Image (tube, rainbow over all chains, first blue to last red; front, top):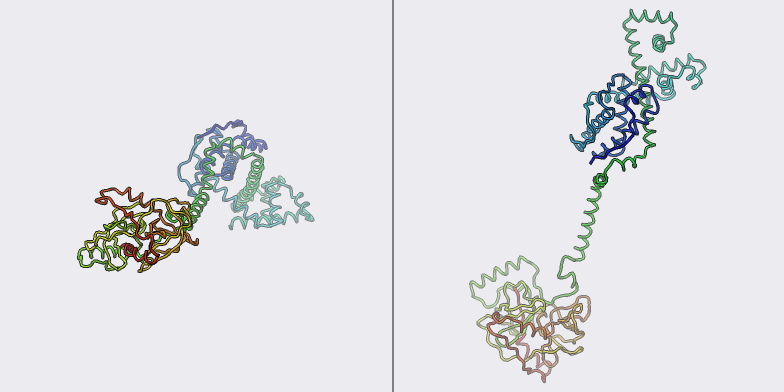
Length: 188
Length: 365
């Protein structure tokens, strides 16, 4: 059943360093090296291309978070980690769709990744909440918050971009926006 | 406003050394301020993480969009699985399509009557036996009555009207009567009734389904041997255009009809039969087709619907052939056919007078 997938695989250390340094190329390499494996896994187990995409991206996000948090200990091959995470995620989805329960055709060896996935689920919930809160915040608040806190722009830039007469006004506006965001986020 | 401002400045390292020292001191003595700092730091981080999470997804989507997914599929998925996947995906559609197709075919076949073999080819071919009742229950009841009648043995004639009737005519003087096979097919019991209204019980002693011929033998003790037959059987074929007539029982009285041989072959080119332009009806089946000299040239057996003047009669040659091939043990002894014709010089009316006593209504129960 299984077909050997021949792909250039970046060394695991290279990938981890790349993630830590926010290197652009590493994501490309990761995607190219491991996505076919996941596509195979998902499609052979009654999924489609989009399912494979979702599952794989989720696993990459988990990897990124883990590495950035600093608690990623490489005690297996990176490939095995990604495969295990995707496998677990896909099994979960399958049981939610109640198509197949339990058994899955395996192509690689498997690690236990339950813990990582639970953490990620919590994070995903937070992500959705934040997305919702930002959406409700409306403009210009949303952009101000995004520019300042996510893109680390200076107050001066924001002031110019939105045409505030001075930085204090902008600061004031940003403060109000942040308060509202907090309210929306924690209330939801 | 002030506090949050300060916390943010503190967290973003925008404070001067003095401010920083002051802030740290007040943080150390005020636990609620400390808590606010921690919470704000967390929230700021959360927003920042959120931004990174978003960026990661959008980066990956860009990469994904550049990939040639179908090429990767080609590479990693064995063909059999692709077919399986397709099959899984379209199985319901296939199932629905197949059922619709089957249903449509069956409906068409049913509505065009293809299942009814007898009528599929010969949909306009109408065997001329007379039907009294289509009720199957009656048929069962009739046969029960018949059995009772037999046990009581009190009456010569059946107590109830027959389900089918046709015509038959004497083969010889010993009580052998020929009729169509389709008249007696599926019969529980068979009676023949002569022109005077006397009924006699008969049995089928021989059938030839492909020529549609049946030979009956009267088994009633009250049956008296006939006087010699006035008609003879024509061994050779007749000619096109020859005048013919028949006698039969399309109703309860003997009925005469005449016509002419219109074709040397029967329904759909059937060479066993003649086509006769003669108006015959249900009940005429099994009647003799005689030419003007009183020779039996055929046995009326069917007509074609929706076509004028197309009735059919089995050629006498085949009747003779059928009789020749009758096994002896079904007869007891060989049937000797009359060869002397006493009708040839008589007028039609006189011919009929002579013949009518040899023509029977065949009643089938």
